[in-house]
Length: 474
Image (tube, rainbow, N blue to C red; front, side):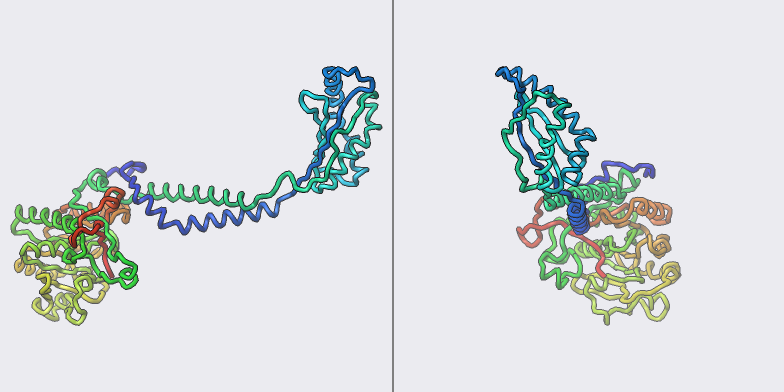
């Protein structure tokens, strides 16, 4: 694997992107709400209404010729001078003395209606009364301003000014705030999708073989364990096992395919039958994979011993629904307190021989390195066709690493979009450097749009089934 690869399309899985977004919709919702409230508060606090008042006058010379073109040319020349005077200090001073208030930013405008000799006078202010009065003040000063314009200009009122009833810049805080919230939600969603894409976890099957220099031993697809609301609340299904009548054929076939590959290795090396299954982190499904592979062997009439070597957080006794009182902890055997026949639990329903633990222990690394563990594995190898060992996660403790030299084969369960690629590669390297043969990775809990939208035939009839999700159940 090349560590300098950052952007790769193999890391793109649309289903993973969408699920990341769905899982973080609560955060998007919070950001949208904050943006809406912030924008609304800002608009309300900084809103300044502006009212305008407008009047229209006919501009003609005193000695009118009656020609429209001549009147229009005269009006243009008058308006040009009038516009300059409106921005001059003399006009602003007169307006201030008449109204005793300044017009907003000098917002008084005089313009000629195109193609006519009509002059439009407009004033803008915070108060509609002030805007109305400004029109009168402007035209009321005409006599004093006329020497600057033209002594023969006549202004006849065509439409008088009116008091505005609504501001020009009507405030719509709800619409503007909603727009801000939508933009914020879109930006945050894009950031979430970008982070999801850049997160270097195992999102697709091709990553394992193309970027990790190992074999994809098998893929186990996602399926909801408890499919109804009642089942979810009561957690009716403790584990997904191939012996369950509601499990889809897709799941059973995926486990059987892995079992066939393990059988092939055993046929090549008949004296080697001890398989260790581990993972990088917790909750990647190693225990479920281990027990289901064992069940698949047992279904074929093989004698299988399952050793729960995860002494820190044992799970198999729960998954197999073994009463806690019936479990004799294997730690007692390793400590020399009892014999193998006392520890071995035979499950009549599945025909599996189980070596279990029901309580957690600390400092179990010494158990893995002990001669007692070596003897236990040797005895199990002689008495069974296959020995399946479930171990603690490799990234958390060194128990699995210590056990590698005691087994014949090892496998790594990798849950989709869970552990970082760099951590998976470290575990693969450790396995490759051990005396055990590294068979490859099992990609677990795999989801994509194609496999999740396509219906699968269930083992329980023709009901629609999804492929199975596997993970440790504590």
